Amino acid sequence: MLAAFRLGIEHGVVCVGCCWGLMLILLALGSMDLFWMSVMGLIMFFEKIFAWMHLFTKPLAVGLIVLGVWVGISPSTDPFRLSPHSLHTPKMQ
Image (cartoon, rainbow, N blue to C red; front, side, top):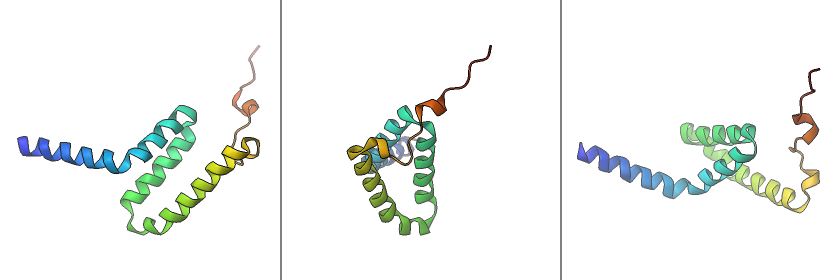
C-alpha cells in the first residue's frame, strides 16, 4: 500500500511539474469565462488521449500566442470577445 501511495505522489509531482503552465491557464480562464476554459480543457484532454493530436500541438500553440499578442495590443478588436450587452438578460416586469 505504501508503494502505491509513493507512486501516486511521484505521478502527481511529474504531472504538476510538466503541466503547471496549462493548469495556470485553466485557472485564469475559469475565472474569466467557463466556455473558453471548457474548450481549452477539451483540447488538453484530446492531446492526452489521441496520438494524432501531436500534429496540432505546435500550430495550436502558435495560434494561441498570436491571439494573446493581438488581444494584448488591441483588445477592442478581439474576434472572440463577447459584448457586455450580450451577457445581460432582459428584466421581467
